[in-house]
Length: 97
Image: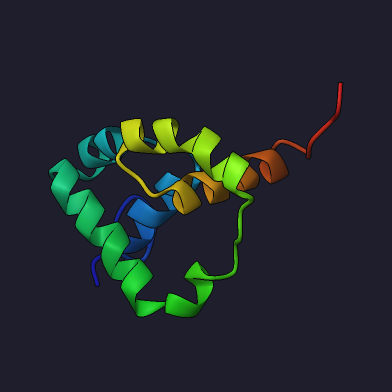
């Protein structure tokens, strides 16, 4: 593993940046790799940790609402949902208006 952008590996960097809401294109530019390489890094991480993938169950209406955004960013709906949850946590939580 080669440290990248302060993370222990390119895979860790790609996963963390995805969690921060960065698009695959932005991550590719930061890592100086192709968008396909970013997808591969994230997929490799998900393949190694299958139990984590199943921890988030979304209602179908939420999944469908997230689908166009995830498609536009070339990520899975679950990855987008996790990124949104992490961002909400980082920013101090959800405040109902």
